Image: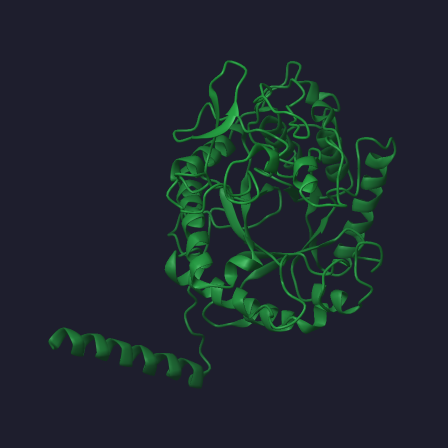
Length: 445
């Protein structure tokens, strides 16, 4: 009884003090830590991190996820174009595919803590600054999916702190329905992340990414013309107000992932001026350019540079910071093969052994970008991954096809990404042929 009374008294005292704080006009204490090792996105190269791969037997109970459609490993329903090099993983799981030596090809699961830790170790080894942990709208809909997402994010928080890498959450609006739901579930999810896994309060040496002195929350996918809803009808104003102004969970900076043609409100962007009203309330703009530029078009690198420069001018004039999006190549042949009428060629945007990626990086930095967003760290579904992938591939039969890394070392894109950070921070000059990897190196940080 004494313990219950003390607990009740403590709760009552908190209630009184909280209401007194509101009534007196003094601020309620924020749940966020006062600071971080990373107080600004400026000068950093951050990657998107999906963390969505599951395998039969990994303990998640979902079978094979994001490697194949349908939950079981069936080569005909394979949905990845790149094959990860799993030689360094503590835990891997056998597939039904075989290597050339007759052994069963194996894959990792993002569910395993050792997998996530290895990825963050690679980031430290090669000087990759950190990642935005992708959190899709569908994850926020139910307690079950949110809790599953907490597991991966918890692994990442621990590994980011261990290896000194920056980490932030990026909500992806993909999957938001045309009617019957809005952004309210993101608000609930953010509260849980802050309260339950202490996302932004990991101690004095936490590595959650801050920007303009506040925790940075990214939201991707607003304003794309292929979405089924009107952007003014999904409660986005309420979400922005919460993240900015809530006395307990707010006080955040916001990065918004928008279409490439966000300035002109055309092409891949909705023709709705409301998007510009929303942009006036955020802190960082990151236009999505994956698939908008190609290594097959001779003028695309210079066209990209012109685009970035104009974006920077537009954002600077509106007191907005700008993150340039870069990617190493693109291929989603196997994924689209599952969808009738949406077939896509294998190796749609070739990497050219890193030349395309490195040229985009040089154009972005040369055009005034001070922050880079790499799409993506582990996205083998769409062939944009920069982590270690294999050149020696499992044996597959048509119509299934896989891509190797064009003979470059398995760490080539991690290495280039680390070098990008050195150039971005002015610690080294941009060397156009660096992607050839001749007498060049990068030190981890």
